[in-house]
Image (cartoon, rainbow, N blue to C red; front, side, top):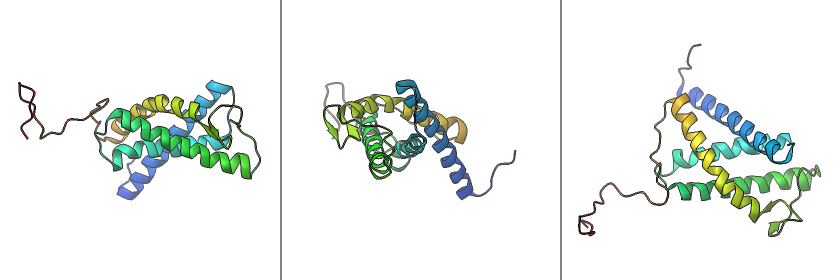
Length: 163
């Protein structure tokens, strides 16, 4: 198979493949959790996967992992809210209803699932980075759980910085 020569075409193909992988993963999570899913969750999952991957691509590549997970949970929750409003409220398809779960908003999102997405997003972050590295030759990020030390910041033996 010949590789596309256009950088724009390469980027479109990459984003399409990542979207499809993210959609399949999200759909599979739904099926594993509740036994079924809806095609709208495939679309939501694909969009979420692209946006989660975009954190490393368009922001600090060495962002602390916990901050990436928090951003990812916010992204997923916002996408779930948007798709919930469209699918459940406007189209009346009743794909899900979180009204009975404490701390929900309009029955579309809730704090419990935000917390779950926070932890599940770790897998999404690693998978996105792995796919980008193996399939598209992108650089693998260096992970730090809480804080990335500045390259210019050096710590002396006594515990004082050079600043």
